[in-house]
Length: 145
Image (tube, rainbow, N blue to C red; front, side, top):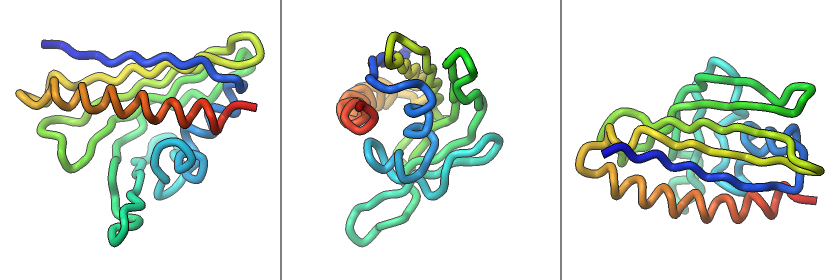
């Protein structure tokens, strides 16, 4: 069974502003999880937990595969692998695309790789789908003017 999550959100902010919330450690913390450092091309990335007694421990991590900050026309793309301790198979993949729209932009996330998680793939996809919904509510709030 092939599962692909596609999430699209319309944001009241330009693509360059939203890009910062996808790549800067402190801005990631406002809607997702804090980064150990800013995401940079050709380097592994790590997001850390703020759970009491475990602050700063790795929570999610992966490798950057595509790094295309918004260009003059406002289009941008970030692709990275995505894993954590509970995954049962190879890393997942997140592909983020930013497209200008009016005074803001459209952010589309395509999250794939669940079919490589064996019997846990559907459950992992369902949990991840719900999680992205929660995170995108916060993203809308923190990036908008």
